[in-house]
Image 1: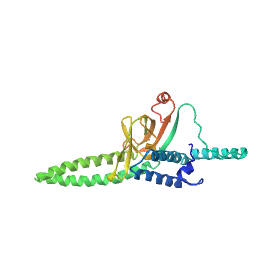
Image 2 (image 1 turned 30 degrees about the vertical axis):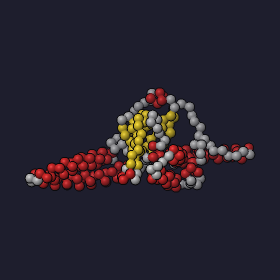
Image 3 (image 1 turned 30 degrees about the horizontal axis):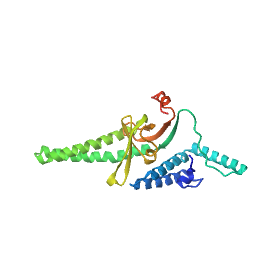
Image 4 (image 1 turned 90 degrees about the horizontal axis):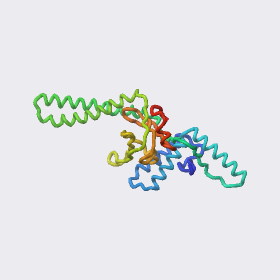
Length: 250
C-alpha cells in the first residue's frame, strides 16, 4: 500500500483485530447505505479493503510494521522525512488475498435454521390444501400450485445448506465474466455478484470493488450453497496460472 493502513481505517497502531474489524464494518456500512456512490467513494472503499486485508493478516501486519519501523529509523539517522513504505512487488505469478470469511460454517448453520422450519411450515400448508382439494374444493387448486412452488424453493435451499454442513470446500479459478449489484430488501441493502466459470458468487463490497470484469481470481467456496470462504486475486502472467494444476488450489 502507498497509504498508511492505520490512517486509512482510523485506528491506533496497537489496535486489536476486533477494533480493526469494527472500523472496517463502519466504512462498508456507510458505503452500502449510500445509493449515490461516486468514483471517490469506490476508491475510498478499495483503500479501506486493502488496509483491512493487510492489518487482519498477522504475518502481513508484522512485515509492514517491521518495514515501517526500519524505514523510520533510517530516515531519522539520515535526517530525512519518513515516507510511507510500499510493499515490494515480486516478479512472476503472485496472488493477493482480497478477503475471507472465517465464519462460513455459521452462515450455513443459520441458513439451515431459517429454511428448514420454513420448509416444514410450507409442508403443513401443502398438506392442508391437498386434503381440501381431495375433499372436493376446486378453489384449492390455485393456492396449492403457489404453495408447491414456494415449498420447492424452500426445500432446495434447506437441502443445499444441510449438504454443506459436512461438505469439504472447493475452489473455482478463472476470469470474472461479469460483475453486478442489485438492491435487496426494500432496496435498503445491496448484494454484489461475480460470475466466474458460469457460477454466481455473492461477495461482500470490499471484495467487489477490488475486481473488474476480466480479473483472474480464485474463489474458495462450499460446493452446494457456494458460500464464499476467501477470494484470491491472481496477478502476473496468465499463461503461468493456466498451466498450474487445476485440481490444486493456490
